[in-house]
Amino acid sequence: MYEGKLVFAQLMDHLPLHSFRRCVARYPSRNPALAFSHLDQFLAMAFAQLTFRESLRDIETCLRAHSSKLYHLGIRARIAKSTLSDANAGRDWRIYRDFALGLIAQARKLYATEPFGVELSNTVYALDTTTIDLSLSLFPWARFQRTKAAVRLHTLLDLRGSIPSFVHISDGKLHEVNVLDQIAFEPGSFYIMDRGFLDFARLHALQLAQAFFVIRAKSNMQYRRLYSHPIDKACGLRCDQTIVLTGVHSCTDYPGQLRRVKFYDAKHDKLLVFLTNNFDLPALTVAQLYRCRWQVELFFKWIKQHLRIKAFFGTSENAVKTQVWIAITVYVLVAIVKKRFGLPASLYTLLQILSLTLFEKTPLDQLLANSEDNTQSSENTNQLNLFA
Image (cartoon, helix red, strand yellow):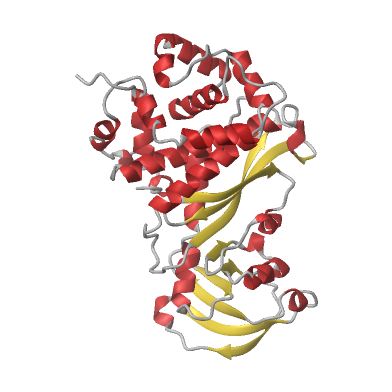
């Protein structure tokens, strides 16, 4: 019988803890951690994500029931609800953001050659925003409407592996288009966006950064056609044009030429119009790229269903951001383990197995390799194709 580490400890071995310590040192606290370290806090919150805990009391009760095993989980301190609450509220959330970003960099290297549905060598990102509704009385700092609060997750998803490369957490009032000002665009990369991000001045900044975009056009866009290019209507294309904008402000905001591609989606009986600053790709590939934007919608549905980011353990802004970034870290960690072990099972299946076996001592690779992915028959496949 295997007498090694617990499954939870084996999973945490895939974390670069030297990087975590550097992140902690980067944001020193006026009240340094003594008995309850930052790592204890992180491990307790990661445990909560993996086992679907509902509250701080739930975390405390579950871990105390296994108090003899906490040391072997890597947790050195006694877990108390009040101690964990104070840590989430008082310790800088940027520690967990920086740690998550470092882990994301590792994951993106592992998934760099992963196919995503379009034959393209460029890096392709999908940008979108999701809103999490909150109680205004409990989260007054996140005011969204007169009687409502919300936080918004603005996410740039690398389509190779569905890895979030950029996440910005804001209150509900921040419009999604403003997030474009915070993204460092990569030359040669593609950014796929819905029309909520349509701002020609910002798109021109993306063009000046030598990056490409594909975005839905609005129906009231004013433009003048310069050229029409031949198309194959049998594949759904309706036009492929080179245009310039003629609106009072848009022509100044974006003075260059744009490409306008119209595509008929027979499955949904919709006529879609796309704008792009790339004139080399086939028109059909432009439409296919936009279709891949759905992966970021799947990502949002997935993390809302299978991680704890809709109900929060604390009500302060720091506690909310800490919980979200640790949830993202857990998501990326399981994705890394899946890739390193070459596992065919979906991410959902791996999380279900881990949630029930964290206190066992089965070798992690053996435990996960023996899994069978039978979730498709019982779950909505549109929401569980991520990492399938």
